[in-house]
Image 1 (tube, rainbow, N blue to C red):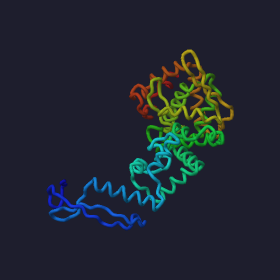
Image 2 (cartoon, one colour; image 1 turned 90 degrees about the vertical axis):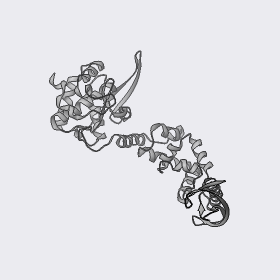
Image 3 (tube, rainbow, N blue to C red; image 1 turned 30 degrees about the horizontal axis):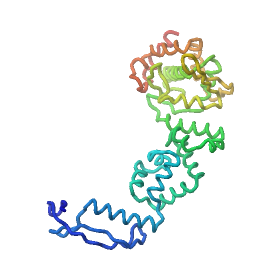
Length: 340
């Protein structure tokens, strides 16, 4: 069998030389490795098949001597919670391909191995890591729910769940001030109070129309003050401007100031928002409240369809492609205040 020799610059035959390997990563293993030697220049050659067998032999002994976790142990952990390599990597906060590499035979560091073993042996520790990953926005709701069993969920307080949602929203929706959020830093607390206030003034406030209320409020604020109120980013959707990536669903689950009601109708499901009446107007400035009241006055007697049709007449929706973010540049030419 011949391989390419980079020294001779041609394909050559080779002999196998057995060499002792006393240690690997500071651990005594006392084994050997086979090395291909060029028949012509007598330099060491790299032969993939030989190196793979060397690695298998060395890694196996190293795992045994250093008590390093096996690929099968990691696979078993994933299968226990029905999570993918990508999901486990995100939970642990490791590099993108780390778990994939370990499951294919790569050797983790002793510290990483010990840490994964701890999470395998201690379910409570693993659950803590999952909660941390969820709070930091590394995993989504689906992954979180797969790992956190119903029994464990019962032990999580409502306050903790709400805080988790807030952390997730801040991670997903927060961005540096720019033209797509009206040069305003995201303010979840203010958003909750504004929604509760709107719901207290508007009968049958649906989640669809709420998106338009918030968009118009932010746009009018930018029109008058050159800065938005909420810090939210909006995008073009079929029924008008909406909060990006449909994160209004998660926002509607923050029930300290309002409650969400999902109602089944003949035309499908409708989600309504009802105020708990405990909004804090101290969180909203006088100028902001005037803007909010202006939009409420314009929209509160209109149906969901009428509000949607109004938003379709705005340049921000007409000149933006579907799913694209809507620039606050369009706030300078709002039809809704022209026709007021």
